Image 1 (cartoon, one colour):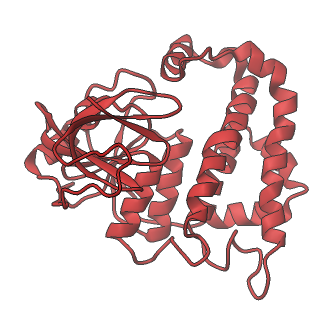
Image 2 (cartoon, helix red, strand yellow):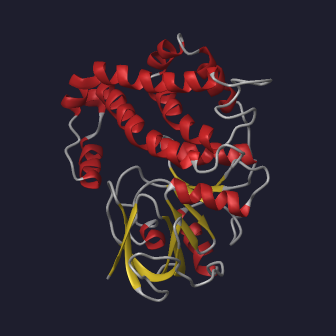
Length: 315
């Protein structure tokens, strides 16, 4: 039974970003519960927790809500430091790699996978993704570009192969940095996993010239963690309602916009899914912003966002 100390991941099985967090949970062997959320809007029981943030996944611990994989991974490391994924050599670099895996490589994955799926993509899904991105989700264009994007996708995979070939000493080539899996591996795993789920024959063809990457991927897939409990979205709301946000110092540090605790602000992603979440500023620094929100369904909540990749403005 989930409680105020439990990790609750709001996700759906096919989500590549959710798999990033699921892998981290396996590597850290943490107990967790899951709420399966809809792939497309509406998400009526998630919105009271996030204030409108709609991207997947969202992590909940009691009345603290963590939006975006960057802040989820940061919080998991802070609360559950053993075993650590922030290994020597991964500091800072992991988030730089995430900018690449979540950006250009993910875009190539979208073009390859949906270009192949073609007419099988439901109209409701297309409409939802167009609303989220603010741009056309043009399947015909993806189909036309698919051969070129397959080349682009493979080229990015081969960068992992080069990195693994560059390892030195005993255990070289096991993981991207050193002999243990860390945050860089977690970020890099996502697109390979998604391609394995969607177009395994294409991935197998790519692996023919990437033996070390194939072994790295299989090594990560073999990690077994704790099986999650599945709870309902209403149960997750009850957990939030019965809990209080974790105490945090009401501070702002070196804010170029001169924010102060207690101000009403809004936060949104800087790329797509730009829904402004409004709340009272509790804490802001170079890596995190925390808003206090009041929800009829869940009462007092703290919504956590990463700073990189998110816009903050006064109301």
